[in-house]
Length: 466
Ligand SMILES: Cc1cc2nc3c(=O)[nH]c(=O)nc-3n(C[C@H](O)[C@H](O)[C@H](O)COP(=O)(O)OP(=O)(O)OC[C@H]3O[C@@H](n4cnc5c(N)ncnc54)[C@H](O)[C@@H]3O)c2cc1C
Image 1 (spheres, rainbow, N blue to C red):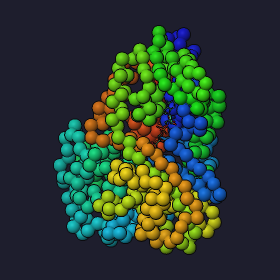
Image 2 (image 1 turned 90 degrees about the vertical axis):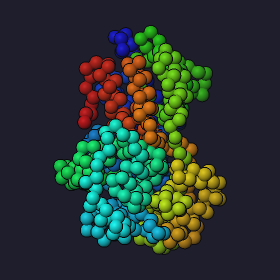
Image 3 (image 1 turned 30 degrees about the horizontal axis):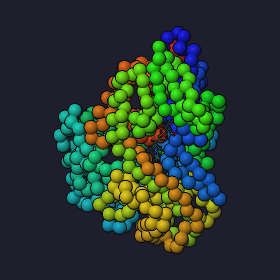
Image 4 (image 1 turned 135 degrees about the vertical axis):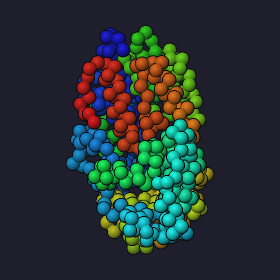
């Protein structure tokens, strides 16, 4: 960035959580920014729709306060007093085994008693600390890793449902190193998942990471960020090309009228992988590699909010929800007990259930027509939770490309991001294709991007630091 271009604003492409967070930090640090967002509202996949007393979190449903960064960020944005922690009962998570809902054990005592795992599988766990660790550079799927360390039952009934719930993914395709780096690190650092988890728990003083949302849903966060960005956020602006000129960048975009272009000092890409692959780059030959990002699989996922009278649901709904292992051969990935999780998600005397359909497991089900989907959801909720009759409220949102799959060989894509950045020092890349898929990862990604830009601009302090 030359002294002349430093006066130009920084372009941020994408107004999802990553881009908004990066912009918020930079603006607070006194760096002028312009955020380009193709949609008419900010937030990307974070969408909370309220109607007639119901709230549909069609994208993410909760945020994990795992690190101090997330908590401090929410406070700094001014949403601290609005934070709504999940009900204590949400600690219980159900898993389906042989058609029955069984609560995941949460203590050593409940683990010994749970019918979720056989005695043989439980005894097999005693050998885990003695199993050899894989070479540090080995690339293993989640299935290979978990089966090797914990055995097939834990793969089927503990890890597989979780993989379906988080990634809507396939345990055989996801890379443990890239999709679950903490799990991979436990083995590498401690030689054992069990001993490593125990040591970490003792070192950190116990389990941490409460989940939370806001009274009007997670979209309160992008709304607050958009509000503080004011005129720096340009909605309904689709960027189609990025050109590196003499020491500056030219961004071309469409916003209803004729195509326009403006100069910027630096560019932050906070776009989904396929959107980045579609951008036309000139002046950065290495960016030709972005076209390979189209190969990152993003399975479709449908989120269905179905509301019922409380009396029409037999299950007590005393938990977070239910995850469905693939071996159970059901047609849903899982169901969140949304109105048990947070207050204000359903009118008095009613319950809200959010069902996820599709994923890598069954992409064809995500393409069912309205009637087919409604019937599927009714039948599955009937079988799993004893739900009777028609929903009194019903809303569907389909994500044709929901979540990037950090599959075997994902290092290839991470190398592309690093190579392009190395070739163009004022270009920065983040978002869920690079830095992790959870909202917490994306918040951290935005902070990282802002801090890297600030370092290039000069000795600027970020207003909020970890
Ligand atoms: C169904 C679902 C459930 C989820 N559940 C959870 C959960 O419970 N908890 C959790 O932590 N995470 C969850 N996630 C993951 C998490 O929500 C996402 O990974 C995260 O929100 C991605 O943020 P992002 O800013 O990186 O990308 P996005 O939200 O995809 O934002 C990118 C933005 O770029 C814009 N854009 C695209 N092309 C252009 C262009 N050419 N010009 C300008 N703008 C453009 C898009 O419109 C979009 O707004 C879920 C995701 C999905 C889909």
